[in-house]
Length: 362
Image 1 (cartoon, rainbow, N blue to C red):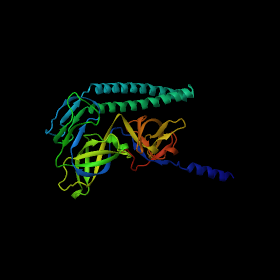
Image 2 (spheres, rainbow, N blue to C red):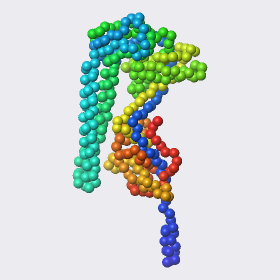
Image 3 (cartoon, helix red, strand yellow):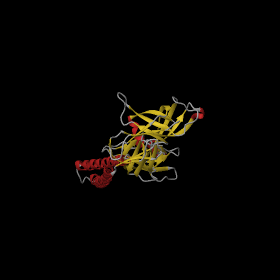
């Protein structure tokens, strides 16, 4: 029996440590994200474009007359801006205040985290600090959206010609109070085509009058692509419909393009992030029993290609598709585990897969 025991001990001594293989991605800050969406419509002969403001107010300047030739971007009319400029200033002040409250709440949460680990505060006090931090972050996002809306509405007080053409109608005078959607003037772009689209409600944020788009005409020779500009964007859907009408002017249509052809219109959206965000796939972020979200960060690799993982609590700002936007807890260059998170523990040694890593959304 002694011989058997000795052999068993030798076998255990010869057993090599079995390391789990993980895949990682490098944390890269994202300050701007560009996304595209394509919608299908049909071409039609261009008709008079009805020009209107998207906000109400008194007309301060009327810059066109009937029969006048205008170029794209020419000033048509201007509303009084004072009230809208004041809204922008108020929104900026609200965002600054929300950021200050969030910074204070985040510091309080960090202190409570440490005290809770030392059992120096109650669970209820700890939970209150966490809830306050999350609520403060939500208030920052809401204040940022309010500022964006206020800036847009200020921009809507200026009405420009979306395309070159002739003014065929002028329906208001300086000093007159106008409502959103009230026709101010009509613009005719003779010889041009436009595309009629139906945009779902969830995508209306991409559509602004004057927005530049790319138009593909698959029925035209060589699958022609050309530039376009949004000339009309519906504020509400037609009765019994869940889509919004949008009209896009084709700026330089091919010679063989005809009314009634299929058209694919691509809209681009640029989102700026301040502070920058780190994007990770959903499966790279775990959640502990306290509700904190965490990731595993890889340390330095040894000669055998192994490294230790360290658990790190992170702060989530939002979900974008199948990615989570991280605003706290990561630094540029961190190597984050993207596979097998549920099977790891803090301090565990792992092997790092040298294969292709996962990155932020395109």
